[in-house]
Structures are given as structure tokens and as C-alpha cells.
Image (cartoon, rainbow, N blue to C red; front, top):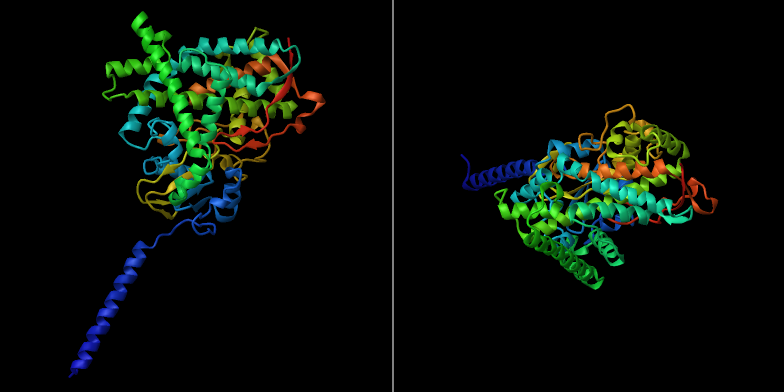
Length: 497
């Protein structure tokens, strides 16, 4: 018979074995198979590895650690996707689970608590705001209704370039001015010009793209105050709110004096005020939400379209063969008419290929807008915890040598005999994102892009100052949320006809 001591020992070891099995089982269930991570530093994590041009730095890291990396920006886990397969998993297979936006301080400050479409967290407010944009503002019929505005402004731009009489012009500034005029007239009802207005928009974009330390390391948020970032954001918010408030009041005053506009004459502010008055969507459309949506469409429509046009024309100057081929196409379609019109664009396959190639090499938002996982998810065999912020490096995907032959070469022909497009169905080309959080204004932006590019190339031969060749053109990028060419595009424009 067992002694009392032996009985106690047997019981003790049995309990130990049972606890050990339970612990092993628990560990096997809770241990996460996380994506590979670069080594991190205390407190700041991997923030120091972002570098001055984050989409470049992140691609270099992905080449070492893989197309799906888990980094840590301060205390914030950040999933970085750098392949078409990873992007598809996030934006299609698990789109709903990654449909949220993280809480980001600067958009919260300057865009009415992130009550717009782009930065709004996933939920009923975002669904209603996006539905307003898709159904009432950016549908095909509405975009088409502003055709006269676009063609009129482009006609003015052509005349301005013609009157330069072969002298040096800042084509970057001129394109910005006329793209901005189109967007202002469509969204706000009239053009707004002047140095103060241009600076306001530039400050908005610069602040939006600035690194906010407090987002990632709350205990160091004093750095954002010390650097002046918080004050700059507050100033931009105040100035833009005063401007937009004035626009809304101007529209309301006209309604009181002249009555409602006809549908064909309405701009976006008119449409939103109608929705608010009629309660047409079963959703209380607040004044700040109206201003947030307008700011979204206005700022994004101007900044991204203007940036992409500058990249296209710069690459065409650098590649005379491509320029000549595109000029031949637009000339054949135009038949020596005064300008290219919108119904001509559908016949221009090489123009469309040129634009796709530009968007491949220079996606307007190279890292898109961050997402956030709303629940635990299995992604490419890795476990991604809920609350993980996620960025997709669209710039790296567009230059992936496993997807593109000679990926750093500007060669529009690669798009002539294929079906790849930029509308969110092909994950090797993602300039506007995809899935629920994809850009709803693709058609609105692209028709401006096509029309401006076609007309500039049709009407003018462009050359660099002082006899410089295309290969000498500075193509370095500016560190911003939008991918901008760092130096302005200075050219001499000679009429072709």
C-alpha cells in the first residue's frame, strides 16, 4: 500500500502534469504565427526605418523580410503589404475585416473629426457619406454634366500656353491652376484663385502628410506641439473652415434671393444642400459633414490629378519616341480641329496606356491610406490581430519585377494588349486602391487627366530650357502624402499648328 507521503507525491505530480498539458495546449492555441518583422528599437520601434521617402524604404525592407511584414511604429503594430497577392488578400478576400480607418490626429483636426469619406472610420456614417458621393456627386451622369466646364477651362489653358510665345513657362503651376479651376467650378460653383488660396491648399496637403509622432508614441506627443505641427494643423483647419463656411453661406444667400438652381446648373455644394434640406437619404446631414465631403473631393481631385499630369508630361519629355507616338494618335483623332473633346478620348488607346503607365510608376498616394483590421484574421498563413494598422505599398507593387518586365522603364506599350486597369479589379495596379475603401472619384479624376494631357500633347511641342535633353530632367520626388515631383516642370511650348 502507498504511504500517505507517496499518495501526496502522486497527487502533486499528477496536478503538475495536468497543469503542464493545459499550459502547452493554451500556448499552442494562443501563440500567433506573425509575419516577419525587422528588428526594432525601444520606444520608437521601426519608425527610424521609414526614411525620407517611406515607400522606397519600405520596399527595400520588404525585399529582405518578405511581401508581408509586421513593423512597429512606436507602440502601433503596422502591417506592410508589398505584393499584389498580399494586396488582394487585404482588399478583396478580407476586405470587410480591413475596412476600418485608424484614428489619426491630423485628419481629425483638419477634416472635421474625420467625418469625410476618406478618413472616416467604418460604420454607418461612412456608408452614408460614401453613398452620397457615389449616388449623387460622382455618378457617370453627374460627371458627364460638367463636360462644358472641363472643356472651357482647358481651352483657356491652351490659350495661355499659346500666348507664352515660346518663352519659358512653369507647366506645373499652369496645370495646377487649371485643374484647380475645374474642380472649384464643379464642387464650389466658381473658380478661386490667388496666392493665399493656393497656399491654403498646399498647406493642407503638407500638414496631412506630416509625420505625427503622437499617433504612434502618445507619451511623446509633446514633440508635435514643440515642432509646431499641432499649431499648423489647427491653423489650416481654421482657415479652411472659414473658407468653406463662406462658400456654403454664399450658396444659401443665392437660394434665398434667386431660388433653387436647375439640376443641370448645380455644383456639389448645391446638391449637398438639397440632400440636407429634403432629408433625401434618411440621414441627418450635418453642416460639418457637408464641408468635410466637399473638402475631400476638392482637395483630392486637385492634388492627385495635377501631380499625375506633371509626371506624365515629364516622362513624355524624357521619352521622345513615346511622345511622338502619342502625338500621332491624338492628331489622327483630332483631324486638325481646335482642340480634343471628351468624345474623342475613347478612341485614344495609346493615351490611355500612357496614363496607366504613369499611374503604375507614380501612384498618386504611394502607400494609399492606412486601414485597420477590425478582427483577428488569417492572412497568407499569418495571424493578424484585430487593431493592426495596415498599409499597402502601391508604388512597390507597380515596380515589382515578378509582375512587370523592366519595371522601372516607362513603356506604355505594356498596356496595349492586356486587360489590366486601375479601377480596383487588378491588384498589380492600384493607384486608387480597391474594395470598399477604394477611391469613389476615379471617373471624375481620370476624365480631367485624359483631356488635359491629350490637348497639351496635341497642341504643343515641349522642350526643356537651355537646350537640356529629356534625360537631364530632375525626376526626384517630394516627401508628401501625394507623390509630387520635387522641382517644377519648366518648359518652352511651341505650337504644332
